[in-house]
Image (cartoon, rainbow, N blue to C red):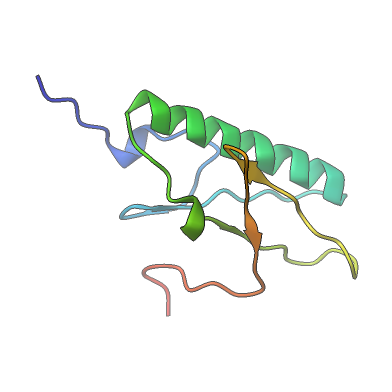
Length: 95
């Protein structure tokens, strides 16, 4: 028996989707609520990947903050690993 997972069944908090790259984005008025919601989204994606017996490449998973106040940072963890903060990222399919 073969089970196939399509990108269309990823958690609704994960958008947009391009090939095997996924993004979750959150907009909010304070860094704490943004971080909480992003961590929830990441946890949901991890559970989804376990359901389909897939592994997320945590080394390629990054977080980027747009706006915010100087010194603001988002701290995310996936399976005990810290997600790297970056100031730029080349997203597949973008120029």
